[in-house]
Length: 376
Ligand SMILES: [Zn+2]
Image 1: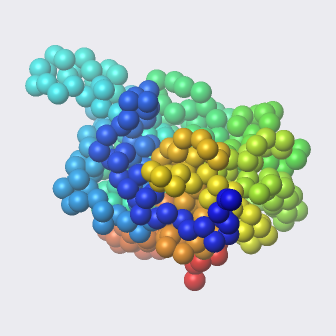
Image 2 (image 1 turned 90 degrees about the vertical axis):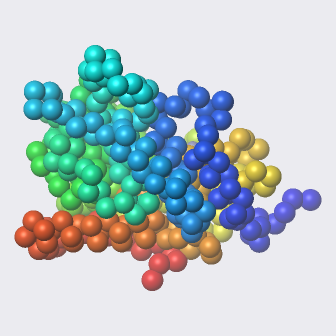
């Protein structure tokens, strides 16, 4: 007989152990993800944080992770294009003193928005003070990949451009408390033009509304202080689209199967719009727990599927929104714990007082999420 999932526990220590493992090695079956290794570090570190288990990362490993992240930082020289930001892996950073080789590899080093976002989030979550960063060169790199219509591509060398990178751009600027030459107005225009007839957002203009994209769009509006520009009717219709994505867990699009990660993408979107309490917490939990691996920990996208760090982290966040005991509250827009967010706010205060800026820009939007259950 199957366990009753309403009383089934979240296997906190197994999930922590599972995520810790990814900080020490990358399994062979995931070798193809090596070029986005910082995202795996993000899921593991932020997941341990949501599990209140960061103390399991020994001090030396914690420092090694911070140093490894900084090892991927690209700072452009005066004569170079705006390639500032973080790389996702170290394949282009050879371990050599040979100046010629180092100079040659330099041509292949540039920041990538998703890797920059996750690298910064890891640093903040581990309590780093970001003092080794030149915030301006990173935001110059973000502005350099913005398209005239407001969207962003991932890197200066060219890539697809869509809502994922709009979100990454917004989180980077928000975390660095600096928007520089990023054009928030065209960004707003791009986001609102991607709103579809059913009130979900699509990845690019004229696409199909999608749960992940809708999260990226709403979080970017929130972080850039532009959420209030949506009128009340539009917001209500968005909530309707989002709420209708719940079957037991959440699906990303109509007529698609439910998947653990949408408990985050849809759940966080509803938290941003102050509508999460309209969902059925028990059925959501029941689905997420049906994807829990009871043997090795971790969550998978579907029951009986193989768990992975992505679905493990997002499953934990989805549960955190429902106030699951043992889990830290999560900031839905930034996709990190409220404790990490508090550390970030502290850094912003320090930077602002050093710049003599006081609290000038905080008033219109402090990026503070709307409440999910479990927060006071
Ligand atoms: Zn998924």
